[in-house]
Length: 83
Image (cartoon, rainbow, N blue to C red; front, side, top):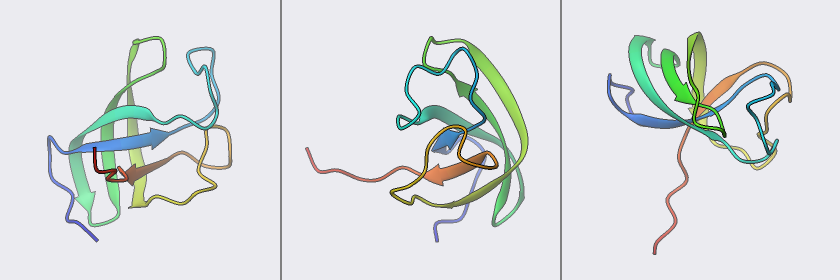
């Protein structure tokens, strides 16, 4: 897995809240602190553009069943799609 570092972009799937417009679409997030290889703090934008923070969030590889409100919050590495 890629090593996390402050400033790296990730996707964030959190708990469902009014700023989420789609359960399947991730929120854009930036790592603000690295606790270790699989745990980070984040600054993220919800789907309306409002800024939030999240602390001690597990970081892992994306899975196709990831979505908001699907258990505990998680940060994942973005999936590369050639354009």
